[in-house]
Length: 152
Image (cartoon, rainbow, N blue to C red; front, side, top):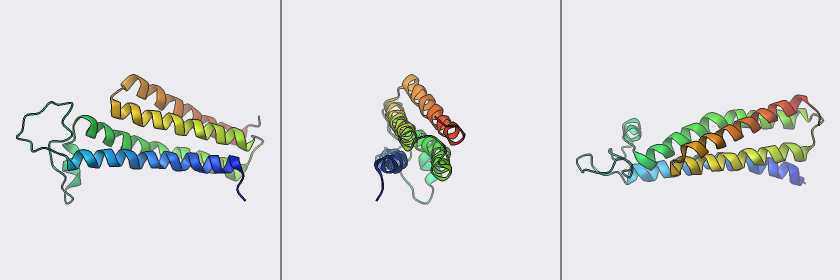
């Protein structure tokens, strides 16, 4: 039977992974709702200028604008930070230092909350709050590495 702290640890990892899928969904929605480039549109509200092309996805991603581009950037950012977070979690499970499992799970849940805020701020174009949420998740991920070697 899995104890509650281990379940919270696993759920935090899963939620952070799911954020990547949410960002991907927003990006794909922007690609599929693309308007032809010939139509004049507001730069911020237009999701894309190149319709989705499965044979040349790079071009359709490059044509994203507004919330579609922000969703792509959020997706890329989640993909860049997830390995460090996952490794920190794995090290904490493997080493089982003197830190209580609840402390590790609590920090991991904090990372998941900050990453969710990061995604929401990215999509809403709230750059200041987005940077603060990124900083919060990065500091908590660093704390997970410290917890491997330190007892509380």
